[in-house]
Image (cartoon, rainbow, N blue to C red):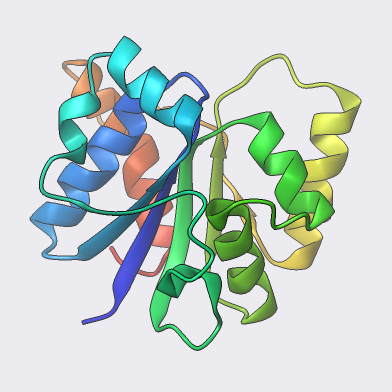
Length: 172
């Protein structure tokens, strides 16, 4: 079984990462995490820090970790929530931390890269960065939950976004 990478950044919306992990677990998928320092802070602030228990987490500054190289065998990377700072650094190709490098690896190896930005309103710079990444092969799924399934609670509402991310990782 191939492993999926999940990146968690400092954008609000930790529930999306929580529900992604829950849905992946239901499907029996293996998920490894890369969490930014601000991502950890938001997980704590939004009462989702417990999702890090029992997960394999790669250190954000460990460029010797498997996600830093194209010779690793990950099936793709989802970043949710994805801050605009992270999205911009991916678009610029800076590779200044493991998460940005892992995204760069996905693009260069033509592996699925799913970015779930949760910010609004969007500036022209945000939109240009998203377009640049879309043209480079990434899938952009703004955290816009839908109501077609008549969600009964916040978890079910967040599931609509998490499920879309899994679909575009070819895992659902």
